[in-house]
Every structure is written in structure tokens, then in C-alpha cells.
Length: 203
View (cartoon, rainbow, N blue to C red):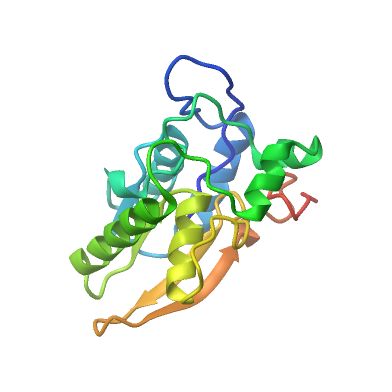
């Protein structure tokens, strides 16, 4: 699952690592309610605040506690700024066009290093939970990377745009087969008036 909408934060000392906005907390609440009828055997979250806070909302209606998985942190984890993609797109910011082109924007690791980190981390979580349903609350780049792997596509951080709090389900077979069940599942935000994503407007 992708995290909910965080606040905008720029030019801080150290990593921006923003918390959820008021709208983001509302999104996370709708996600938690939507998933409350499904039993989750484990909930993992990236160490970044926006993911941890989203995961905590989901866990509040589940019988499990959130565990941190460093391997599903976003590629820009040490960036001193965070600007929601909607704002970048609305202002025609060059950084939005870079995202669409799939250009790499991390001084911490290469695109290949990020891909290996994400794939190995998610596969380790799968191996640790045979015949169970787990949730991993992470980021758009992480989701794109893993879905490209499942579809056997070249690694591209902008393959598609995961909506805020979207659920992207993968069935993992013991033999190693991985099947996409849903992509960008975000019906829990319909009719709420909350932001959904770059390509969908709230109603």
C-alpha cells in the first residue's frame, strides 16, 4: 500500500521525512476502515513517517502491531524536501517531468541498488509469512519497482502512479510465481472529497 498524503516540506536540515497532512490522516482512516473486514497476519511499514503513520491507522483496526522494514524505504529517503506530485504537476515543475520520464533522483543509491534492495526485502517478507496475508505500507517508487519485477518490465520508477493509500495486491505462490491481483485499488477514497492521486480528482 502507498502511504497517505503528507505535508509539504522543503529545505530542512537533514531528511525532510514529513508527517501526514490532515487530509492524509483522513485518507488513512478510510483505508483502515476499508481493510477492517480483512484479517491481516502482519503489517510492515517503511521507516519513513508518512508510511509509519499510515500503517498505524491500519493497525488500529487489526489484531497486529506495525513492524518496521527498512528495505522498503523510498529512494529519496534522505532528501531535504518533499513536495506532493500533484503540486509538481500543477505548477509544471521540471521535477514532475523527470518523474514521468523515470529519471533517477537519488544520491544514496543507484537505480539498480534500489531495485535489488526492494525486491530482496519484499521477498524476505513473503518467505516469512507462508499462507498468510500481510500488508506492506511503503512508497510509489517501491511499488513501481516491485510491480515492474512481477510483470518482467524494465525497472522504471514512473511505470504507473500509485494513488494515496492505494492497495496493490500480489498473490505469491510457494513455487516463486507472483501474480498481480489488483493495481491502484483506492475505492475507499471515492466520494470522500479527499485527494486521490495525480490522475483522479476527488468528488
